[in-house]
Length: 165
Image 1: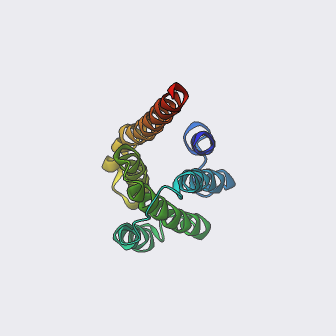
Image 2 (image 1 turned 180 degrees about the vertical axis):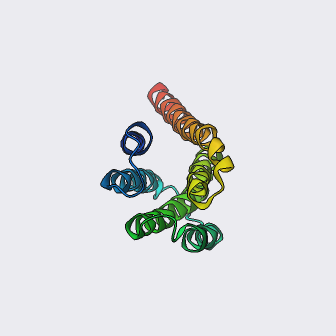
Image 3 (image 1 turned 120 degrees about the vertical axis):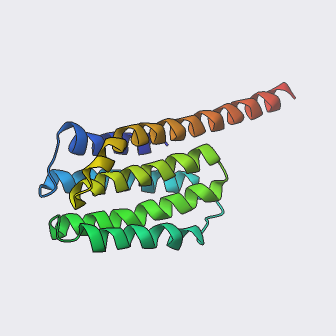
């Protein structure tokens, strides 16, 4: 999970700190880093998840539709392709998260997806949604960290109980 946070930090560096514009390679690197974060988190939770494949089209169709219908024409084709691929990865990540039945984690991943939609709203002449990006993104990271912390506490308690035997 720590590697997922590291990948998210790299994405933040390219997109938030460095401020890479949508038509730059930095933007593509940032999107790729965030996709890696989702992939790492999904891989870390895959075994424990009964992946909710039914949730996938519920999330994926509106996301991809939003990017194809609303965002297309407002950003370069390479950025649109990267965002569409990222939408697929993040939708799968959400399906895995929901399948874990760890609700802080699932809610955190859901907030990440929502913050990405708010970011995309900036490109479709709906900038007022952009003001929600930072609070929703920070809530997402806090919820994922809380889920990791709770999971760590359970593992430590189990280890202590075994050692006490």
